[in-house]
Length: 130
Image 1 (tube, helix red, strand yellow):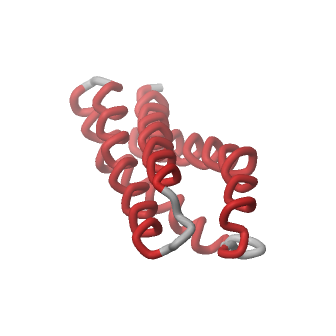
Image 2: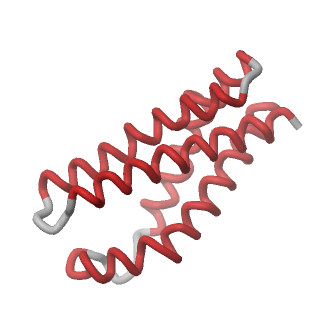
Image 3: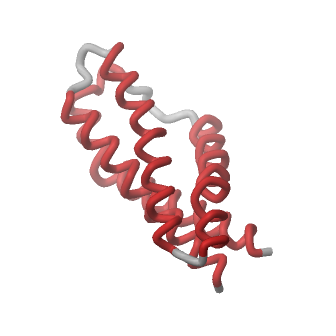
C-alpha cells in the first residue's frame, strides 16, 4: 500500500505540474521558435506511456530509497538527479540533431527536469508517509 500511495502522489503531482507548465509556458515558446517542427496535437499514447513509466522510475529510484532512509531530502536529491539525466538526454539529443535547438533550451529543459522530478519525488514520499 505504501508504494501505491507513493506512485499516486508522484504520478499525479508530476502530471499536473508538467501539463500546467507545458500549456502555460512551454507550448507558446515552442510554437514561436520551433513551430515548424511540432505536431498539431501530441501523441497521447506516447505521452501517457512516458508519464506512467517515468513515475514508476521516480518511485523506484528516488522515493523507495527515501522511505528507507526516512528523509524527504533523499527523494528530492535522487529525483533531481534522475530528472537531470532524463531531461538532459532529451534536450542534448535535440541540440545535437536539430538546427533550431538552442543552448538556452538545453539549460531550461534540464533545470525543469531537475525541479519537476525532485518535486514529484518529494510529493510521492510525503504521500507514502500519510
